Length: 162
Image (cartoon, rainbow, N blue to C red; front, side):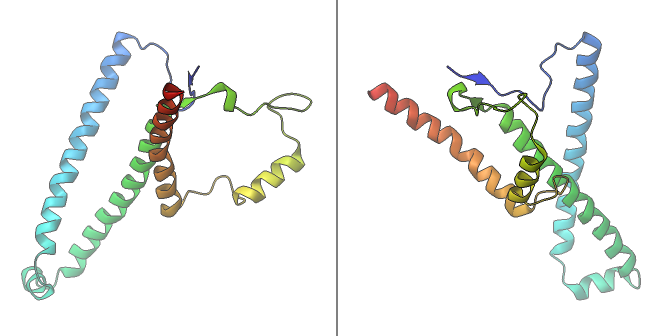
């Protein structure tokens, strides 16, 4: 028996007004991504030009245009990082947890860790819980998530064959 993992997303019913607002926000976000895609096309066209051509085109304003492109690059990097996290959260929402694999909590009250246990866990994890994951960590997590559906399918095939 499997149960859905709870966590990042609310399962509460939305009112009609909230649904309309959510649909409006979703449409605005999609429009912004469409604009970003068009900007990417424009940047690709600029990137096809040689440095000499760009210097001639911008005649003394190259620095100003470089700063503009750097601001776009920085914003795009931040947006991509957040979208990767959102993708992982969305995929995690779809994961199913098998109750027999859940860890039973022990101790005075379930959910409360002793300070020494917390410190040991922080040392194991790497210390700062507020630290952002690195690109390599995000890639490794995505790879692990990709493996989960395949492992589940193999397990189902094995139990069906038995």
